[in-house]
Image (cartoon, rainbow, N blue to C red; front, side, top):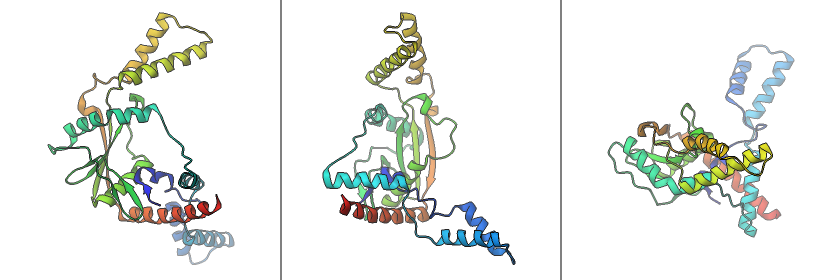
Length: 267
């Protein structure tokens, strides 16, 4: 079983009981450097040493994800995820790529990649493969979900991009969030959703024209970004390849396959 690069975030969390943290490693080093330990410190040292040497195990969430994969493989049972966020991403992908490339592609022609890549463990299709990097483009649903002030790469996307770099043999990558206007039909659906929320809160069947106007005036700026300069509508996170983390992907996919085979036999 290969894992899609976009799915890796589901299995990369390890069971905390069998995974030692950086802080715990630091504490273990400190304890081992002491000439004499109290009984309590000796127990702590041995516990941390055992945790350090323990075989990694999948987290509960990872096991749940693999169980669903097994159900689909054996019986065709699948969770179909549909959302307005995915709809916008699919509908606006080309526009988002065009906006990203106009600012960050350094005059290189950025064409949506359609070629899938795979190895023994993973498979995926990066959005853009440029000369020196790969790029994954994300359409933010609204201005509320655009990471204006964020500095950290979301964990799931970090693993996705490490996987893409591994597959394409690139050392650099970018995660690019892009603000493109929400298509009219999706915006209108969201507008109706907000109206229903207000009616439910107020306990009324209908809203006044003024109330509907207020809802529209509040919602529209969150989905139309024409007032924002193009260069401010793209937020880029740079991620470099980590061979260590790519080895972790391999290790975790192998663990996932072991568990997958166990579940297939059980169901």
